[in-house]
Length: 142
Image (tube, rainbow, N blue to C red):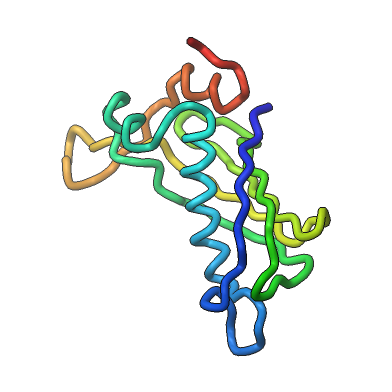
C-alpha cells in the first residue's frame, strides 16, 4: 500500500477562540493531503487531470473522528492512503498524528469525474484508470 506523508504546522489562524484547531480546517487539510497523495505517487494533479481527460476528483462523502485536540504550534504528521477502489470512486484515509499518537482520522470518498457527454454542464463518474489505481496502491507502472 502506498502511504503519502505530509507535515502540517498548526498556526494561530487555524485555531478557534478556545485555542484549538477549528474543525473545518481539517477539511482543507484533507484536500491538501489528497493533492499531496497524488503528487507523492508521481501524478501531479494538474498533469493527471490533463493527461486523463478528467475535470477532477470531487468529494462526495466525508467523515472525521476527533480523538484529541491540536493547538497553535503543534506539528502534525499526516499519513494518507487509499483504502478502497470502486468502479469510479475511491476512499482516502487521512490519519493525523500529534507526538506519534493518532489525533484525527478522516475519510473522503472521491469520484473520478469527467464531463457528461449528454450534458457538458454536468459531471459524470468515469472508470478509474488501472495505472492510477496501481500507483495509488504502491505499484509503479513505469
